[in-house]
Each structure stands twice: as structure tokens, then as C-alpha cells.
Amino acid sequence: MKSRLIHKRLYSALPRAGSSTRPRPRSNSASLYTNALLPTESPPPPARLPRESKPHLNSVALTPSHADAPSVVLYSPWPLSDACLYPPIHLPVKRPRTHYRLDVGAYGIPKRPHRPLQPPSDPLHLAVQVGEDAYFIRGNALGVADGVGGWSKLTQQQPSPSALFARRLMHYTASEFACDLPDRPDMLMILERAYDNTVKAHTTPAGTPLHAGSSTALIAYLSNHDPAAVHLAQVGDSIGMVVRNTEIIWRSDEMWWGWNTPVQLSPPLPLSPPPRTTARIFSVPVLPDDILILASDGLSDNLWDEDVLDEVARFRRTWSQPDSHLRRSAMAGMLSEALCSRARSVSERKGKPPEDENETPFARRAREVGKQFTGGKRDDISVLVAIVAPATR
Image (cartoon, rainbow, N blue to C red; front, side, top):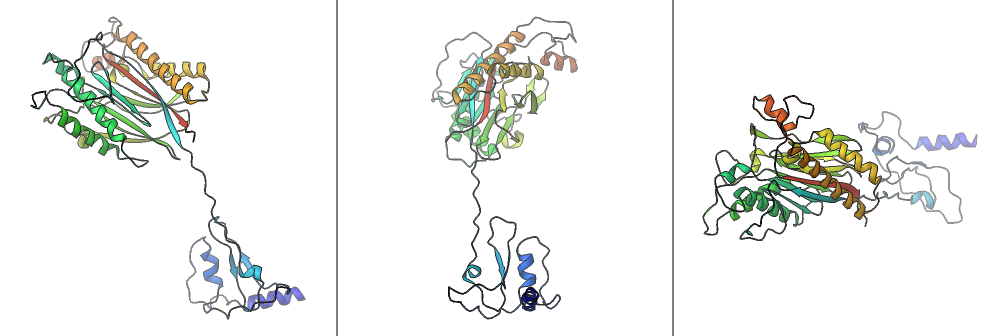
């Protein structure tokens, strides 16, 4: 009987259904309960009992499922205990974020034997030259550029205009990543600024504009917070791919104007628009131990994707799970060297009959457009390999 009286007294303080003029919210938040059950006019404040008094059983606590919201208590006009007057507030628990990094290795083989090059007029120490290719590595950012070789037939200048343009482009891109950037930077804006600085610097010693020379570009940046992602900007036929275990989960498509003519960046010319009109932008979610590969077309013209996977699988078997920054960097460097060496070996292959089982990707594309080409394609080869790993802090 006593419990029945308690229930009767409790619910008599609450309005009957339909007596409130407030609309019932269609929500699963705490307001679903408080707006519908609390009276429209507040009852008089509860009287404070002496501390030795026992609390009355005339309050009901509704605790929502949200971890970041306090408990909700429904009051009756009768006295309540101190414990019910001041319910505990449940503060949200902050989940620690995981930071990520790239452990990177790079390797390059020029098409022609090394010959000393006259240093350009401006310091380009942030970029590495590989024939007419160039690349950079800076923290969680990396990129590769492939100078278009056709310009070298028009001038005897050394380094060639395309080699100089490619290296300048990579140098100024690397310098952009030296600035304070948000976790997800605007890759198109970075490439645009680097291109503008390259065009300004691309002059002869006499100060007259050097209108010759052009280059492709592929740059990447790892955002180092959950969820981790690689952000890329691409112009031309240099390729990027992400390998997870033994599968390629993402690969860029080559960009061409026509047969053997990649989309490219150069000093302002009618057939070479700026990056904002040509670049493709990608964001690829990644996981720890994913492998990011950036390479000039010296790799993709000579090796099929399954050839690349074959090298990756061989190194994974050899290295198992590298557990330190030095071991991952060593694996990345050796994998990039292995890919370069395999592509170089194929590029020196003599001509084979069409549709041979060892036909190279470049020869296949030539045959599909009615061109005569067999064997491998000699070219500069640059490969960058980056392994995604949790950063130690």
C-alpha cells in the first residue's frame, strides 16, 4: 500500500497527457523526456532537509545514453535530498587521436649516363634531379615530376629546359610544404603557388624568359590524424598507387593530350594551361602498413601493375612486419630500388613480335593506336615508396 501511495503522489505532480500545449519533439535526445514530462509552470523550490533526515522516494532520474550530457532529474514539489538536488555531471571522455607518418625511400635511374650539369642560377636543394625527372621528400609530403624530353631536341642547353623546369617545380612545391599548413591542405593551391614561382624563376641568366621546357607533376601529402588519408594532385602521366597487403586499392589514371603526349605544365603557352584547369585532385583513405608508390612514366611504360605487386609481395615476405622507423625506411628504399632496376631491365629489352606475352605497356598502347613499337622504352625512372605507420610521440 505504501508503494502505491508513493506512485500516486509522484505522478500527481506531473501533467496529464495532452494537458501540455508544447509539441512533443521527434528526437531521441534527452529533451524528448524533459519537454514532455516537466510541467509548463515550475513548482515551488524544494525545501532543504537537515542532513540527518532520510531522503524521500519522490524523484525519478532519467539518464540519457549520451556520454556527454548530464543526468536529467524530474522533480516533484515535495522535499528532495541533497543527493537528488545536485546530480553528478558526466563529462565526455576525450578519445586519444592517432598520429601517422610516412616512412619514405626513393631511387632513380637516368636514361643517359651521368654527366656533370651546370648548377642553375637559383639554389634548388629541396629537389633531387634524375635525368629530366625530379622528386622531393619533405616530412609527410612527397612528389615527382617528369620533364618532357621533346624540348631537348630543340636546344643543346644543359641541363635541358625540361629538366630545369621539373626540378624547379619540385623545389618550390617542397618549399610550400615547409609552411604551416592545415591537416588537410588545399593541394591545388599548393601546386598553383609552386607553378607560379617556377614560371617566375624560369629565366635565362640574361633575364629573358625561357619559354622552352615543360613537366608533368604528381604530389602527395598524408594527413596525420584519424581517419588517415593521402591527398594528391596530378597533372600528366606519372602514376600513383596505394597497395594494401597484396592488392592495389587505388591507382591514378594517366593523363594524355594524345599519343605519347602527356598533359603537362610549362611557361604560359596556348597548349599548356595552368594547374587549376588541368589538375586532378584525390583523397585516398589509408591504414597502417599501406604502401604508397609515386613514379614517373619510366616505371609504368615498362612494368605492368602485377609486376609492381610481385615486387611488393616479395618484400613483404622478406621483411614481414617492420617494427621501427629505420626498418620501414630501409624497406621503402630497397623496394624503390628494386622497382627501378626491374623497369630498367625491361626498358633495355629488344623488340619482340606484337602481342608477345612479354609485351610492355608502352608497346601495347602503341599497337592499339596503330603505331609500330616493340620492346621496352628507354626513359628516366624515378620511384618513391612510402609506408604508412603510426607516429611515435
